[in-house]
Each structure stands twice: as structure tokens, then as C-alpha cells.
Length: 163
Image (cartoon, rainbow, N blue to C red; front, top):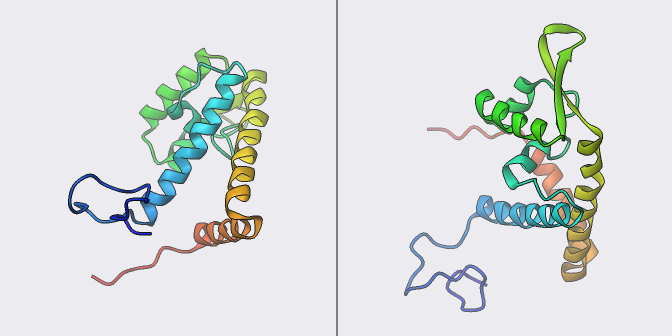
């Protein structure tokens, strides 16, 4: 199936696609967005309707519990200021608190509250359900192959491309 195929989900109106079919990065993002929508819908169904996608990103696997804000900002590749804004929102909503680091009183640690811990199984169940839907559509062998490929891609060292 190609981008100009009328049965493709990537059909772009007009005679020719201006940029061509989606590359792997866009396809990975689209799959991630589908998983995020499933997580968010499940959270809202379970009464956590004050969470949005940017806040969910802060809470994503493996979660921020017991991390320093600077470590989390680096992992999320966002500024410390942006993260602190999101942490403040999540703190006001009762999902986490920021406490002094017992090992370094100048630093802080992010700690999930009971409400913050309560969303973890809801999120994981939503992702498991999405995986089951993908298995039903694609077959378990293909989903396991996808999982293995993604694990491998996640551990590859970035290649240096000569200039």
C-alpha cells in the first residue's frame, strides 16, 4: 500500500502527496499517539479526568517516582522550567509531591502520592488492551516481532553519518 493508494490511511488530498508517504518516525509517532489516546480515555473512564496528554507524558513509563526533577527533564528532553510547570499542575491535582532529597537537602525528589500510584494500573491495563487489539488484528507473532524490533532499536547506539 502506498501513500497515493485510495485505501491507505495516509491518503493526502490532491493529485500528489507534497512530502511523500510517512517515514518511520511519523509512523512510530502515530502508533504512540494511538496508545496515548487509549491511556487517556481509560484514565478518564476511571475518574482521572483531570489528566491531559502533556501531564501523561510526565507520568509515562517508567514513571517519575523518586526521580530528581533535573533527571526527569533530561529524560523527557524538556526544559527544567517546563517540567516544573507540569510538576506544579500534577502536585495541585494530587498526583505527586516534591520533597527534599534525604541524600542532598539542596535537591528535591518527585514522589507519587496514593492518587498518583492509583493511575499506574489503569494506564498499564489500557496499554495491555491496545496490545491485545493489535494482536487480534496482526497476530501475536507479528506483535512479538514488533516488540523485539522496538527493543533492539531502543538499544542501538546512534550511527554517525559522515558529513
